[in-house]
Length: 261
Image (cartoon, rainbow, N blue to C red):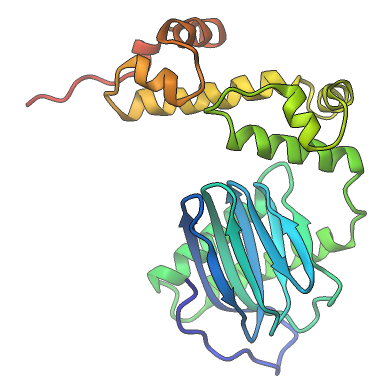
């Protein structure tokens, strides 16, 4: 997935982008063990994977960046369908203890990783001016993140719950089952979710289902019953009531005009 890499440079303390790209895979299509001569920064933007490396296992979630050391063998186990951006970076001053960081609420690193991958794959920056500028900002944000305190236990619990809810949003989901998987009580999960996100886990799940359903309605001509079933609703009427309640519009109003034959 990484293509041919240029050898890292040891003559500068600036961070040098060596390769970049993106990767998507369905559930069960694992990425095999591999290693790099440089650091690899992997930004997980969708789904959930296990990332064994250096004797530890990291569970990804959207907005999480795993920093893999040069020469470290690592791989990905696709627990769900997933997608990531990756940057191979010569980062001589990055502390060896740095392993995992999280994006901010604005998605700053996601945008930077996406732009770096796009520029690298298009080969539209032969002089490296844009990628050099991008890496200087990535460097500041990564170093700032690694210097901050670790996430609280409650924040990690809520993020793990969000990942599970996203992965199962098309299925029947009970909050007590999510709590049991996280080894906490349903009451504690609801309490901390409301405190940190301002809404309940079920409200978060409903929002995920709504966005998925609206996307399917806009981008396909599938019957509402099919959309409802694929997005976790009991029926097309259940979907219609939910859409009307949250948007004030009917599902059909989100569907574009039928193309002329």
